[in-house]
Amino acid sequence: MNESSEVVQSKKSDLHLEEGLQRILAAVSEYGPDLCRSYEGVAETAANIKSALSGYGYSVSLGQAEEIYAFYSQSKWASWLVGGCPTLDDANQMLVEFTNDILFGENHAEL
Image 1 (cartoon, rainbow, N blue to C red):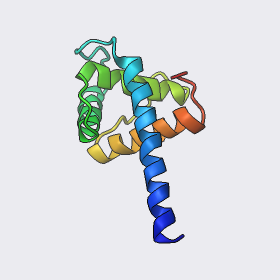
Image 2 (cartoon, helix red, strand yellow):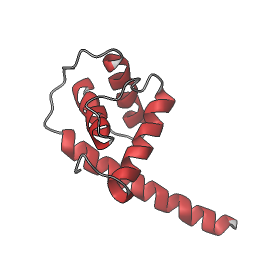
Image 3 (cartoon, rainbow, N blue to C red):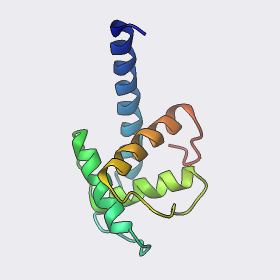
Image 4 (spheres, rainbow, N blue to C red):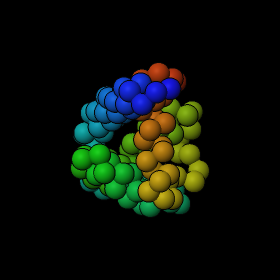
């Protein structure tokens, strides 16, 4: 792959990520600021997702970040996937995977 086609591919990936994030954020816009689940790691997962989204220029509450992970878990046929996103890198990877699932894969959360 030459440099020009790599740039085009990167821009397509960025557009897909942006479109997927917009769909996710629209789905959680009505959720409040507070966490509502008591599973282990919820607060850490929500904080990391919130930080990851701020890196893309989006601001969400912890409650909305929690719901994003709940939708992601639902898309994977679970009520809440064990482990959550214990690091910022995990949260970023989850967002990339989830947006890809929404646009091209299994969108069981129907976003």
